[in-house]
Image (tube, rainbow, N blue to C red; front, side):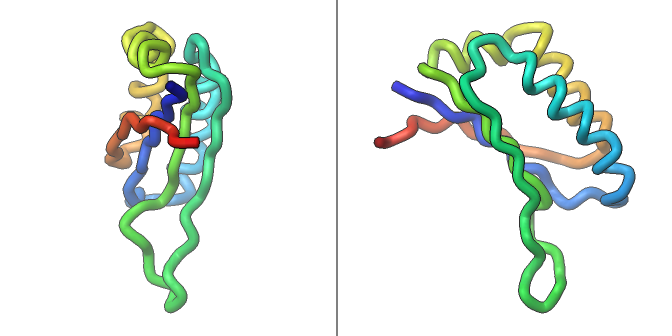
Length: 100
């Protein structure tokens, strides 16, 4: 079954510095084995301009749960999570079964 890993990234203390470091995060994510597609998105602020509970999402698509699970146990995943940790933003990851 197709699987998505959704990384939900909280609001960083310094958005400008985060964006500079985020380029490395994307590059690292693109190296994950068996990655089928990557979707990066910046969350819109609320209508009054205040921040939402998340700043960015990074969705990683795989053909199967097994492929996604194997990918997060590789050196490429260590580089991805290391790059994310280097941004100083907190994040959460979710594995999801894509319903079609």
